[in-house]
Length: 440
Figure: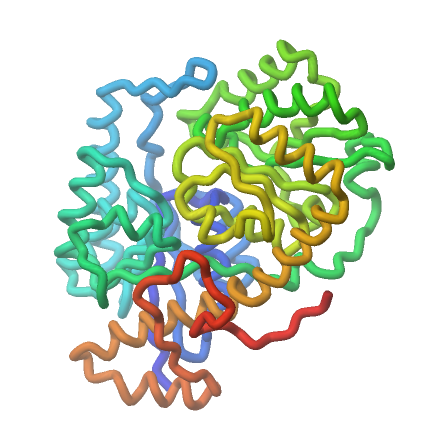
């Protein structure tokens, strides 16, 4: 049976949110029907993890295009010369990618990041391949948004938006067949019944057993709003003593260098440096989530979806998050967590204090979150919906309809009808909901 080759393009080989989604998708595709090839612009943990799963990965070196951005504290400074660097870097990458496509057969190219969309689309169309954009960001208005909307009308055969908030930026593409919302999915089993080997997180980080842990897990970037987390921590510590605040994550982009030092200095200035722990990057997120008491998300710009909120829900933990972007499509306010306005450290501290003091409410929200994650955000549902989009594209005038159906029939996979626009509240009768029972 013929396998259809899907080439995935990502500008980096490190791990960020979009790369986690890419890894989850590639490793859960039906390998009897689809053969993945991942092309990354650099080496890194994503490349290592994919290769450990026997996924073919190629590196097309790409210089990081943002080196002329810099930070002064929490302020992000733009140097106009960076635009020239950006487009020159992308142009060179596009040429290299064109020759790569000429030498490597692919039925569909699936671009996973902004740079991949901008500079991978023309080579894909020149060599006559089908193109899927996977949009993970709420792109800003202005030149970038205008360019992407123009390109969206002509280049991609399909656009996958990870939330309705992301989908809404493409005003040039009418609601319908071409653009679809497919919510991210996670491997729920990773967050259940964890067996702790060796030290617990509290033992490792020297946190007293009777203390609670309030954590934020995010790449260290100014728009993630860590400073409001620290300001809220200062207020909380005046009223609730037995708590530690854990910041998980590190700087991974050159334009964000200096932000970690800014946050550490802020903690010192707030006199809470002994109550805040900077753990840096961690690969054991499921274990960390299993041992914390509350997960916090403080993004000050629209958050496209937030995998970490979903992972906290799967871990049975309540969440306090800013009400931005696609977050309310994941988290139900008052049911699985608490939503607050961005940049409102008072409301943030009040929400956290409520859950610290009211353990029954925290437990109930955590339980509701786990049920919601099981019902709506499984990795099986996610992979099948995207496979359905691949099927639709390949069936459009390519003469491969029968081979795809035979492949699915031979593997027992029923074709999934992907919905055009996901309902923001994600009701329990979601049409593609998986009926898998997960252990409590």
